[in-house]
Length: 100
Image (cartoon, rainbow, N blue to C red):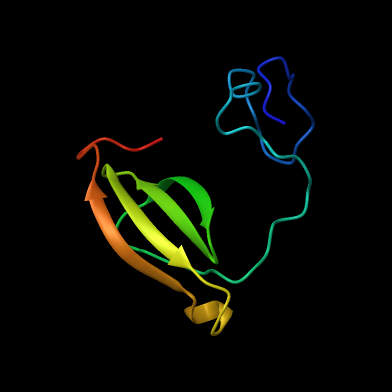
């Protein structure tokens, strides 16, 4: 839930009052980290936003970067989880400004 009316909750991380209730960077709660196998890694530019869209049998991931680029990654269920993501386009959306 993303709700501007939410108050801060107990967390192992220090979260200030100006952080809570915002519609971005909302704490998800819980004390266990999310674990999994990375599908796509890019060490050239920091990811600042991620959105997904399902189309036919594919999932497309739109990744905003700190440098203002939009990266498009296609994710398929086969062959193996470690080889099923493919970067297919990079668009200069807001060069020099992070995409949030």
